[in-house]
Length: 349
Image (cartoon, rainbow, N blue to C red; front, top):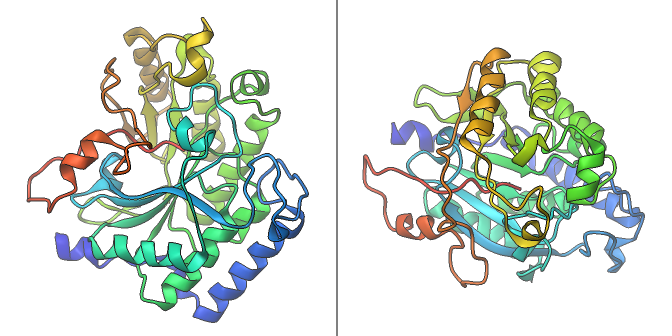
């Protein structure tokens, strides 16, 4: 099984190096009057200007880690080589990664250095390279990939996103990204504005996921149970039904396909600014999560990933630690033995 898993290769290898370089240059050009994400700030990031995300054309990364907390078809025995990008194009009051998404902890890297880090992750035997929170820096990651490919990178790419992606940017990733892992956070723009400070999330995220689905279809697995290509949708259940779970699941099942695997997440924790708001200052209840599961089953989702409802805060990431930010990951980052389980928290964008 391990030999079969190791044999997986990224779709970008179907492009010539020159074609991938050209795709990266086309993406980079979007930085010059930035329309990389739907905020469309219009600044010239190539000249060092910054917009909402406060990011120039450089890549700020907090961590390059072997992560064992994604869904089983992505984690396997050897984990995902995740690149945790700093900053974000959203501003979620309850973000568990607020240390990097809002406080912007991390270091600046040039594209060649990020390419080298991808190769280091590949040398650890991970199954995939994961881009976590890539929406505002996709051109830079694509430039890094084009360099890494010339140096020997072959692993598939996982695009792990908050869902607030611009369709023209996604089109430049067609045939490059293997697995799309979007969150669909909200069905209501009003709720998105209140808790993530974004006015048009619902429609923009749906347009983005439709484009991902057009490119890749539903997630497919190989004979070893590992993801090959396609889309898996994540949805975080929020207290009091604020996420609009029924409307979101109806969109996925009825406007795309119930064949799309659904990862229904119970991992909401009242962190960061959430503690100051009575509506989101608590965990979700067992009843709320059970109701979300019932909705998914009623809509006929063929593959459903669920989480235990665990009220502890022990595995929240800590990006100030100077090592792997996920406590349970650190226990796994030695050589893995056959039969050893991989358990941690999904690296939600």
